[in-house]
Every structure is written in C-alpha cells, then in structure tokens.
Length: 341
Image (cartoon, rainbow, N blue to C red; front, side, top):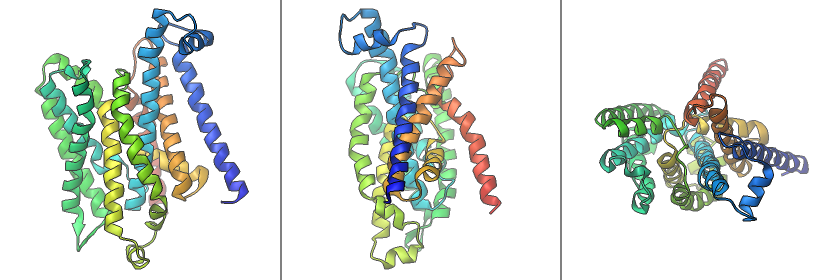
C-alpha cells in the first residue's frame, strides 16, 4: 500500500472515530436528564459518584452507545462479505433473507418466552443469539438448497432465492406477532422495526463473543474476498477451494448478523450502504475495506440512533426506521446508477 493510500486510510479511520466520539458525546450529555462533560468524567472515573448519574450513564446511555457501535460494525462487515461473494453491489443481509431468518427465530423466541426477554435472567439473554443463529442458518440452508446448481452456488440465483425466502419468513414472523398478547405484540413490533432503546450490558455480553470470534475469521480471508471478484472458473483455476471458502465466509456472516439481530431487531440497509461508502473512501481491497465497513456501519447506526432520540423528542424513532429513511433512497440511487451503465 503506497504512503498516500496509507495516509488516506488513516485519515478515514480518524474521521470515522471522530464522528463516533461526537455522536457518543451528544448521546451521553443530552436527553431528558442533561449532563455536563465533567459529570460524565466523574461518573466513569468513579470520582464522587452519584446514584442518579450512575443510572443514566451506566445503565441507560452508555450500553445503548456500545450496542449501536457493535451492531454497526457487525452488519457493515457482514454486508461487505455478502457483496463480495455474490459479486453484486445491491446485496446485503436483509435482501439475502438472513435478517428475516434470524428475525423469525427471535419472534418465535419472544412468542414462547411471553415477554420475558426484558427480564434479567441470563438464560434468556444468552439464548437470544443462539435462536437468531438457528433462524439465520435455516434461511441459509433453504437459500443454498434452491440456489445450488450444477455443483456450484450461482450468485444471481442466490439473491433471487434470498428475496423469496426472506419474504416467506417475514410472513411467518407477522403471523406469530399477531398471535401475541397486547404487551408482547407491542414489544415485537418495536423490535421488528429495529430498535436498541432497551440495550443493557447483558445484551453486550451476549453479542460480543460472536463478533470477537467471527470478525477475525473474515478479516483473515480478506485476500480470498479479493479473488472472488474474478470469474468463478478463474478462482477455481488458481487453486482456491471456492465453495469451501464461500461456506466459511457465509456462515461467519450469518453468525454475526444473527447475533446483531438478536439484540437490535431488523435493522436493514447497513450492510448495503457501508461497503459502497467504504469502497469510495479506501478502494476495493478488502484488507482495508473491512475495517472501514465496520467503522462506517458503526457511524451510521450510532448517528441514526442519536437522530431518532433527539429530532422527534420527547418521542423516540427506532433506529431501524431512521436508517430506512436514508437507505431506501440510497438503494434506489444505486439501482438507477447500475441500470444506467
């Protein structure tokens, strides 16, 4: 990597971290209970701590910021992997049906737990990513079954099958949601729209191991993702075990997306927008794209959540809706630009 490119990469990382810090500052200091920077510093450093400050910062605002960052990182990186494997810039975990599979499993989880997802039991919290993973894997198996042809996975069939499977699983989620009682229905509706307002440290504990284990796997295969830009026959010809590498990358992405969906609900478009923005900023090599995808995803989720908290105060708009307001026009723009080529 040339020095100029290294400088650009470092500048992008610095700008992204700066945006995260600004959004975190606004989220920590503003709200129904306004606080100063010194209040936050004293609380975090445990200098003359006060119970009301501890409650607002450590139990409400800080976990929400951390969840937003982790979810954004996970969805951004997973989106880059899926676009790399399918060779399609319009692909993302939502369009491919992975979100719908994980979401359907989570709705089933809510249906049988009867709203206990808000409880404090560790068993319920730690079971959430496992339910999401089971749903994501089920969706992936169905997609693989219908998209597999002539001994290989065809990218275009993968996308079309993902859209169909995702629609069917979303219908199942809606059916089960309508069977819930009033309180559970409200919780499921807010969760399906993509919300992190109920974030807590146990949610962070449940998602962090998945990201810590699976993101390094994806990063270690960044050169393989670069190779997948080539024609399938060329990939096989240079000695890459194409289907095995695709399986490892897709399974890693499913695990990440399922963990994210389990704590944030159906947040879409992050996996679509983050890779496009990252490519414009640092180029097409995944060694540099993947960290920037995660950073861009974190910025998008955190800034969108901050907007949802303050623009419509005292009411809050779920982060998934704010991102959709941005993502739908962006998707249409990408589609129009692709047709114009």
